[in-house]
Length: 504
Ligand SMILES: [Zn+2]
Ligand SMILES: [Zn+2]
Image (cartoon, rainbow, N blue to C red):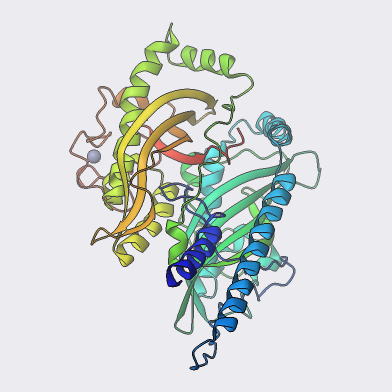
């Protein structure tokens, strides 16, 4: 009987796991945990909500043993409860399927964004999506890590008037471990004579320390950026970090928005993008267990999403590099970059040596997964990826802008993916059922970087050729001092997307 009850209890547990994503680095984690979400808009500034704190209610137990009838009634109640839960689960699955954008709708939305992006690039040939996302990343992490601290005023040139006072009445709290998991382009408007806008949806996590109580949150937010119409984007060095748009000095401004170096006043949107509006769409409290929840792979059998004009873009890429045959680039790229990075990055991940892959990753990817690595270390868990095997790798997208080239590849692979503790106790996943999956990886390199990177070795600093054993957390080579996570000297992995989430 106990076994039966245990079995029932287990089935409840496994049901509650069905909704979550699997482990592995790069978006494999569930970024949303328990369903205690709440939403609010940017208008209620100074009091951003964090979902409800989870309360562990204490239930009273009766010490009298159950009679047989009571036991039967109890079991019936349990079974009915489970049936209701299963039906709910099925209903939820159906309704979420109905509300999920079909590939056609998704593709149409992506096409619209691409057209809008093309319009923006017509009026601003310096615009680089990669650099813009770097800028958003810097602003996002500083918006939270500075929030209730005096440094928040350093962000004044990049925030609308309302948002500059956003945390005035909040706190006192400290926000750390701000990690962006995903950024989606939602809308780009260049038609309005009052200014250009870019709207993004950001998925992120952060840890809030409020009076000694630490809670990890998953949030989804909509950020709308604005700037004057007809501007040209600043050069990469001024886009990769928050700095004075006039003199390029690190962002240090007075309350009035005066640069402490060049003493010029910065008006929002005059030279650089600023955050005009912000809405929190969802906030969810996370638990450690959310990191190791496993679910069926969803998108492995989906058709590969390819850029509409991929053949033209391949030709353009060839011309830019003076190649007569695409294969001359592609074959070494698949072996030396795609496969080599894939194996190295996953190996660093499963050995909990994320620093070992530092020189292969963009800052955002490194930071996003570093948090999870630390969480695994705290619990003393290991995410094992045994018998990792890479199958087909196909090119799906090539993007060229004045500063960067980006290549997105769909990679098929399989492995035994499970999490165990230091004593070998299984925490999640399976050692016996082989997991087949595919992911879309985007590699980025600065235009002109290929000159210094051949012959290529992933165990070396791409700038000076010294062993890649002395790369700091910020991806600065300890031998030559070069920062290598910006694709300046060689390819870096910029983005990892699960197949079911990739939109093109
Ligand atoms: Zn300045
Ligand atoms: Zn070096």
